[in-house]
Length: 112
Length: 113
Image (cartoon, rainbow over all chains, first blue to last red; front, side):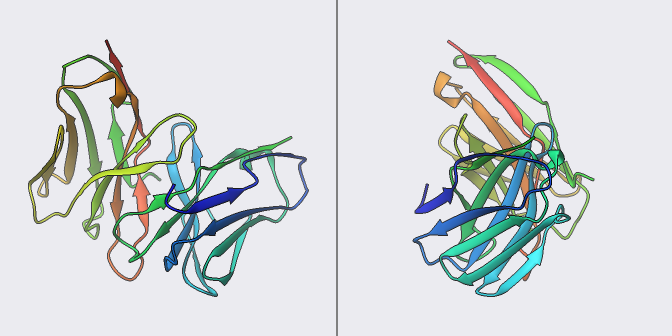
């Protein structure tokens, strides 16, 4: 998985609680992305980062925030988890932005 | 609204057969078209990619055909093998500075031995 780890790998939480997912890379890639994967939707971009402290929204950013204080770490926070945020979350990294995106192993999140 | 439409949702092919997956897009700003392969429980991995100035690209048993005027592109898997059983996603990327990928909904390919 190209030096990408995601934590936790599985999480069960309750509606209304905040949740933070972590993506850590050892490749020193500039770009980092958070996607969610749901049946029938493929992968949808939540937020992405093009450098430390530089982030922007993707197509499904409502209810999510991100932070990147170091090159190697990209955090995704669900401010108040809802059942519609039950999904598999993937982090990806890219050296140049457009060329290959390398995906992490995913985090399976269940919001009850 | 899905910016890249992918079909079929699933397909079954016999070993040695050809698998064909089709994708269509509307936004002519897209300038990079990758295909990703995903096995159960794993993250997607880049399989092959093409730019719109090329009509075809082949890597081993995998070929992308690209029709710029029709805004369509497809993946052909020749001599399909059981190890090719996976979910395949087409995608399209915006150019600089965004580089955001829009993915199709995915096609689950099952190769029967």
